[in-house]
Length: 444
Image (cartoon, rainbow, N blue to C red):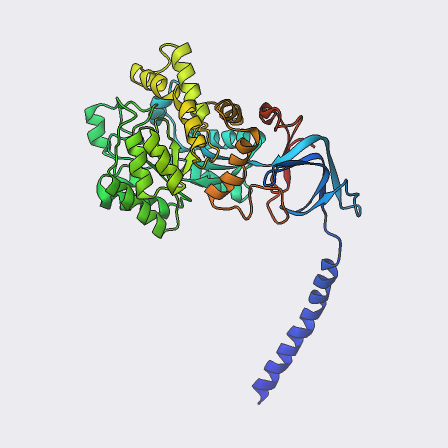
């Protein structure tokens, strides 16, 4: 009985001691919360496709809490007003294909022997900040050494500045395929290194399943594979199919079990068709799609991430800077890079769904918005091009609830530019204001 009485008294004392703290919390909750008021001269409603004049975005912490007509006055000393009255405001942009670890360099092949992971990490962080300042508040990193996944975590924790990152970890291809790190090495080094599924080199359905599970274990947000060769590797052909449909299907089914989308690097038509039939989420590059591949992508609603700027960049470099690339790379750059715009034009006429992506790292980071100009030159309207980097890209990365529009409840990811991007898409290359999660990185 004495023990029960002591317990009761102890419990009452705890409750009595907790009451003032609860009262204090209730008092605090009634205090006004600091807000940021963005006074927008023109606000692009990407969903409706119209510009709204004189709007206010109300932001609390990392979210948009109101979109109000007119210029809302501050309600108290905690409110901060940012004047964007002479500019056009639109959602932060999304690039669905970057490589933050990479930079264009003649020494790229040798860097695997000269750079340590820490060297790559510092460079990747600098590239991430450059990308954010260019107006891209979210990116999909489509393959690296694993530094990309570590950088994603560091950005998410607020340790370093950068865009929101969806990481593919290490990309997967066949032996001798686009992502085989031993391409071009001596026979002795190939035999000594002998990469396997843990390194992103997998052959046959079972190894392909193992490779997917390895990337899942390491924290990847998506799986990136190559169903054909590439341009910048040292293999002799970038267009031939390098995975069977059964192998791709094993990858897709395993990834689907783990709730991971699959992005597929593919240039040649046969590799594209195998990947689409096997159920990949997106085709990256898609340079040599034929009519059958285009029709198949339109029917299955497979996403197309065209990366026109990458093709244009490598083709221009091969033509204007003889000797910059090894001969095998230069030949592929000219053969593939010069046809990508035409392929893009045919695909959009057929109704293929397009999400914005650039392959930044193949060209200099920060120039991502130049892709918009190439898309419009190839036949897409300015509004549709912007939608590929907002509405469409938000769908592809799997988070339309938080990204892609300036609507209540979405992340406060905001870009402002001088001029009207619907009339002159090039203004997106010159951001005047960039906010991500309510934090300003460019501008006021």
